[in-house]
Image (tube, rainbow, N blue to C red; front, side, top):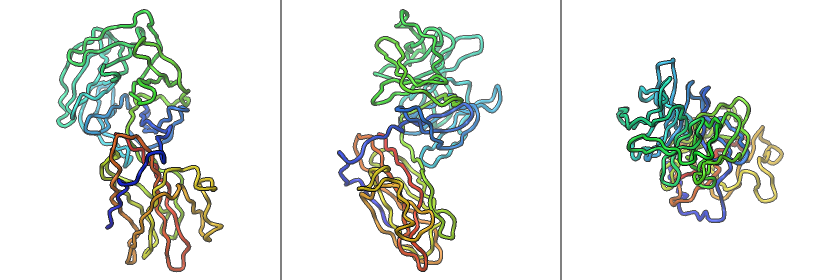
Length: 364
């Protein structure tokens, strides 16, 4: 197994962060990739019913909630690289989550006919510790911005919350807003953002005002979002008689970390190339995706990324039909997108074959 290191590649000016930049969860159980530019949603994974919040702890783990019954709640962990969701700890009716430092979260609970309460949650043990009462009811969202912890109360609007005691204050009483903001996320370009059932908003923490950014799809019912890394498949591979070639990943998408690419359904005894690109829309004079069938006599095969970096892998035997490649991601604090594809280049009596594309959204 060869190690593919792309850490030494100079990325400045070659690639940039995409508008597909948030992972979001819906009440119905879908995990999406959300575009802050357009509000468009792309399916990423299937989760459980009752997802009502989303946050990343300081270790990089992504957490949400599940509701199995009116009184049965769980804390779940989402893997936005592998596209899986796991039940981890029994929980309570949390309406918002935020990082609590290290392996911990802060969660806001709304008690029926009572005031909202702030909890500290140890994600290693599942222990929930009451930080304190907010003194307000109907606080739904929770998020950090500018070193302060914020919530959204459905009559007062933006409120400040003391992470040590849970006490909530309304610093913008004159700009109270009854928008039903369901969630908060901190974004490097937009600052604090939030969403209702129909619209994405920028929340100004200097005056409490909410300004619309983009509409959200009807019926999406998003309940949480987070600016974090993810691996998003796009397009589809072609079939070389083994089934469609599929490319996925597992591991971390933080800069400097190790990621593993895994592609399946290759033809046996083939020379394979792992392609890394900076652009999924244009390669030279060609628009992407590019149909390769007229060039190579293949069937339903496409090029899904520009070819800016590649490495060959020789697979012997009959099969294997799976390729596994560890990838060293570039270090640094830059948010960037890479696009990856695997190509079978030499197969006896068969034309070349290609996998689907895979977008790697790398976030510190």
